[in-house]
Amino acid sequence: MSIWPWGCRAWAVRPTGYRRKTGIESHGSMGINLGRSAVQPGAYDIWIPGESKVMTSSEVYFDETLYPWRKAGDQRVADPVPQPGDADSSHPPTLPLVS
Image 1 (cartoon, rainbow, N blue to C red):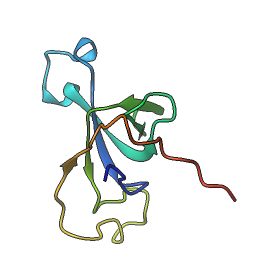
Image 2: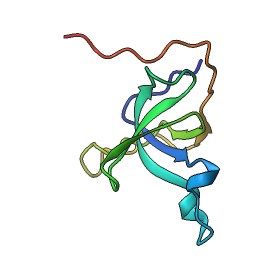
Image 3: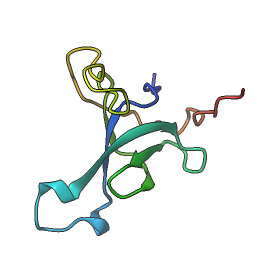
Image 4: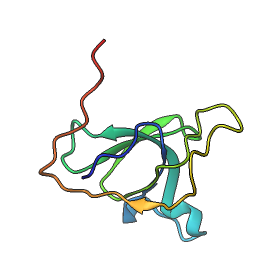
């Protein structure tokens, strides 16, 4: 399934036109998973705290064992194994929680 935990660490790969040749760090942005995009099929919304914006990308890697928004000492829930996200456009977008 292409459902990843909300709030886990995610790396969104930047499109080729937005990359710089200065280093590997310019090829992606580290952020927090906000779920599947409601606007772009097969993509994920990733909150990039360092840039204060949400990036939508279909090429995303996830670390579902790290939750950076938790307090220190409680962020890692298991041994990390980053996984690429499945950008299958046939899956519906993540729906917001209704309270």
